Length: 176
Image (tube, rainbow, N blue to C red; front, side, top):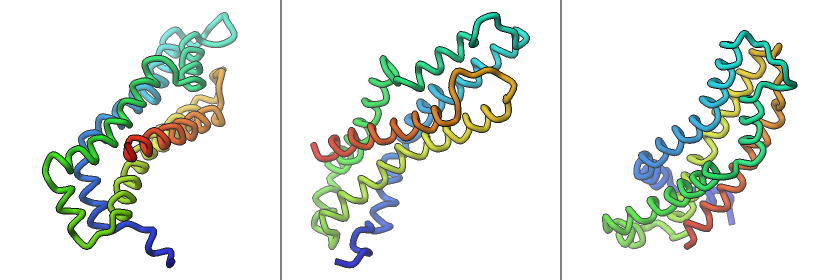
């Protein structure tokens, strides 16, 4: 089978992107809020007290480090629910609008339809994490004199780990 058969149709990709754009915007703002905005808030708070801290690390940085290490609690649950919503919206709106039966009757293979929805979902999951990891890395390098309890590897491992876990959740949501 030629490799070109594994790429979905551009028309399907564009249609799926426009269909899930509202959920993507909510997803992006949520990921940005829990990562970059929280990091900048703790950095500004640290600078506001003059950058002097008697303990080993600023308490805000320790809290942020716990967020990066575990993504547990309400943040992890919200991330999983938003990704499930992304998968449900992708197929649910097709059924609600009656376009799923129309898509199946068109000259698109079911594999192409599913692959298109999966690729759009993966891009929508990965783009915010990559963008926020780049921003946090830049903030980390710009403030090299601050004693952080984490480093660039921690930020990128958080992003990659989150994308991998949420990719599994998205695929299960699409298959269900």
